[in-house]
Length: 203
Image (cartoon, rainbow, N blue to C red; front, side, top):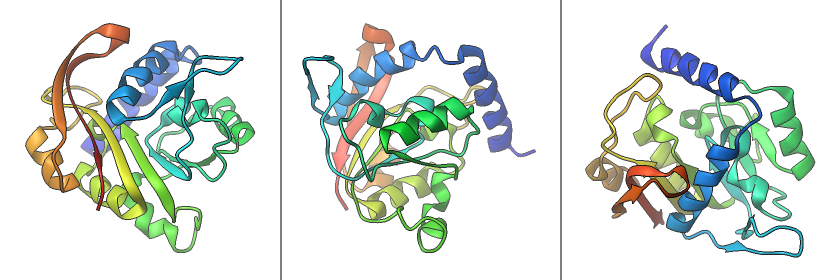
């Protein structure tokens, strides 16, 4: 078992521990969205809606992709290599979101034959995910090729811990994304605490 596979086991256990109680993760998403330039708006039914930006690919969205808070996200796709309970997949199906159980490093490999829906994205989103991946540089490159716009939020300079096998830095992310992101220390509001990197990028 390699380092990435061990990290996946650690993350799987963590997700099993929290089960369906994803409130803490969803609360932090509103911090991520504000930094990623994603508009939040209110309807008569709920104040927690993210604007529809067209066909969006969410890399590593897990069991509670931000796309679940988008009205009518038809054509949107979540790519994640983890195994989740059936209720997660059913939730995506009910919302009209395609869930594809592959690594984001392999998007190009699968987009030509197995999953034709992995093409033609208006935007690609990824947030709090690269620390968990096998090759974050390749994922950044794939994201830039997959969408016209890439919105990013990642924690940086966190060190390496179980489940987090990369110590991300602004220097590396700027290089991989071909641009310049912003770095800011968050104070724990809505559970988001630490040094973060965010930005909107175009190929």
